[in-house]
Length: 335
Image (cartoon, rainbow, N blue to C red; front, side):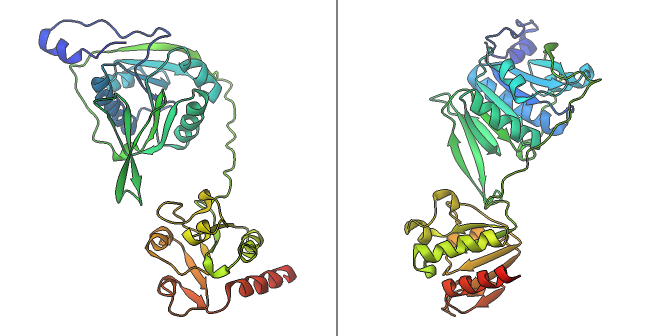
């Protein structure tokens, strides 16, 4: 592993040693294995260049295809070496490829394939992962990758230091600066030595169906302290199941021990956008309102007509939330 010397070459007219492709390559890697070298991937290579310069490392791009002319554009964008493979890799293929190379950093574009392979690879390599990064930097003291995570549709960002190695990030390339185009850069295009799936015999890809969660549910039944007891909150769970949705709660439900952390709706929990949000016994506060503003239809059930959630709801039912849940469950059972 060594620092990129393209800047020195441009000034001195010399030729630096080519980056190694041995099994101890290290370095900053960009993985784009969807058969295209688009602007987003070039932007990601440019970000990898910035990180590699701070780390004193090389930039490697692992991609699939045989278009060497297109691969040259990634060198102008900052890659030291482009490794071309054939076919589409499985997670096991990537684990076998990277384990002996011991990369410092691996970056995936935030596409469907990138999200699946990136998360799986981080787990298999025991690395650290930022699942959604809008930008990246290097901590100059500890030489660790710091990811900038968008919050509330990128209204704000929080910085997350990735401690485990290799440091991995799935990056929203649209949020990155424009790609470099520096024709004086030198690099190499080589065969990756990987033929994952013969082009003549493509394997069908079966994507697993995502589990229904607060983040993607069409129906969410959210409960709060107005349900009064754990038995009352159990009615919210039963109602969510009957409606084909999921249950969640606010901070009062979490403090009462009725929900787990992953079921919390709020700024420190999940932001939701269901087609129907049935709010049982929720008073409503700023944290909750910021997290449910994308909901399609909000129906609030609570006895207090002056509760803050009244103004945010599309329909208000002034009743005891537990009694309402029992009555609706009974009606659904007869349908």
